[in-house]
Every structure is written in structure tokens, then in C-alpha cells.
Length: 332
Image (cartoon, rainbow, N blue to C red; front, side):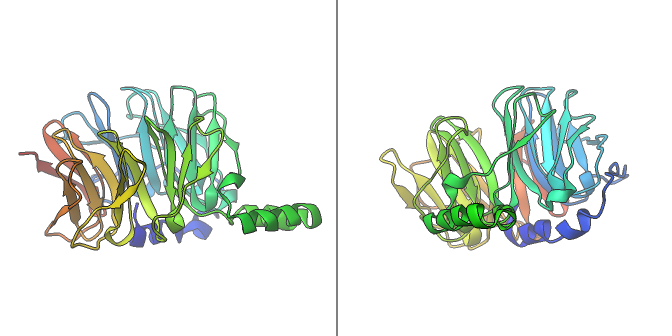
């Protein structure tokens, strides 16, 4: 998800908000040849989501089927808790759920009135989950996604913004409501690690929670640009974002910059079954860190030049979600 493409993801909000009644996704003959923004796997299936509400799945990484999707707006994230139950989210603060491994989906939330996209979704178990998005959007559920409660994470405000809002809350309640809808940065990714929950976002945001999201603390900035993913790999925390900027946190808690000669924006971090990590980027760049003792990222660029939004290892293949569709590479 995914800077220049991120800008595209955020631009159409005013248009999508005009659609008061969601429409089901079109069933296309070439469903795998559109923009895909996220991909995930279960033990037996790989599932990807993307443009126009498109959801596709495969049990072998070669033959794909299009799922029944109740919405035709852009989907940005997908998450499964087991082989059958999963969730996806996207524009219009929409949230979908499935209980049949991703073959069919139900609409759980649709909020075009918010004029914001959901950008990531995560569940701790079958009942408790979190969805995050643009301008500090943060929703929680305790019933598997049937109902969602919005929260405003004021602990992630800068002190001067907190003072400003406290004054508005007393003297201009209407202005307070308007400001709280946009004063926080975009929450681009939420990740659960052995060290707690992390949010990575706009303007160098890294936030940490050790209480499953009940309270949050903003970490000291290590970079002023946006981060688009954060993940734990072999016990270390990695964060990646604009212009090839990536960092890892060592056991002492210090962040170290990862070196690379490329400057392609980094969209997602995926741990490899062979060790180390892939970082998928714009301009068809795929970064590789072969083990976590290294600080130098290797990079190669695919010939088509299309942004790689995410990827997953499945059935002996590296399956890529790209702006041009699903692409597959055999693993050596």
C-alpha cells in the first residue's frame, strides 16, 4: 500500500462517499489482472484483495477463482485467523467477513459518511480485532466484526495538538469534532508481535501497545517520512516506508538503518520460509535481507516496472500482489 499508489488510494474518497448503497463486485473473466493491494495465506489457500472489491483465491497458486464480494470499492487489507474465518477492509471504512475460507464474503461495516479508507485489519482471536486507517481511524470489535466501536487515540497526539484539542473541546465542541476527524496521521499498518502491538504510519509514526491496544505510546521518531509496514522477523522488529527507508530494532532497543542503493518506496515486509525477509516495493523492486544479522538489503527490479504491493510464499511459489495483477515466481 504504498506511496504513489497510496495517494491514489486516498484521492477517490469524495467520490466513493457519494455511493450510499454498496454494490457487489463485478464478476470478471480476468479477475487476477487488476490492482491487488494485499495477499495472505492459510494452511491450504492463498487469498488476495484489491480494486473494485475484487477478491480472488487459489488452493495451488496456479488456478484462481473470484470470490463473491458484496462491495465494489477498493479493498486494501485481508487477514485470516484460521483456514475458514477471515476479514478484509477498504474504502468507505468498509469491513467484510468470511467463514468459508474466502469463497464468499459478507458486509460487516460500511461507513461512507466517514470519508476515510480502512488500511489494515488484525484479529487476536475469532472475536477480538482492530481496524485502522486514514487520519487516525481506529475501530475495535469484540464480537467477530459484527459491531465496531470507533476510538480516538489521543495518546498519539503531539503535546501541542493535545493542548489545542483540550481547549477546543471546552470552547468549541463542533470544532473539536471536526479537528479530531483529521488531526492524527494515517495509520497504515497494525502488527502483533511478541513485544506487543505496533502501528506504523504517516510522518514517521511508530506506536506501541503492550495491552492489546487498550493504551498506546508514540515512540521517538527515527525518520520523518511515512512508514507503510512494520513486522517482527526472527525476533526483531522491522519497519519500512518511503524512498527505500527501512530500519530494524536490535535487542538493545536501538534502531539501525538498513542500507540499500535503491530508493523505491517499500510497501510490505514478508518473512521468508528460507530465513530473512522480502520487502516489496514500487517500480517492481523486491528487496531481500537473507538473514537478520545483515544490514545490507539486496535489490532486484522486475522487468515490468509495476509496483509490488505485497507477496506470500505458497505451494513452492512466491505469489505477488501487484498493480498489474497476480504474478507468480517459482522459488529456487
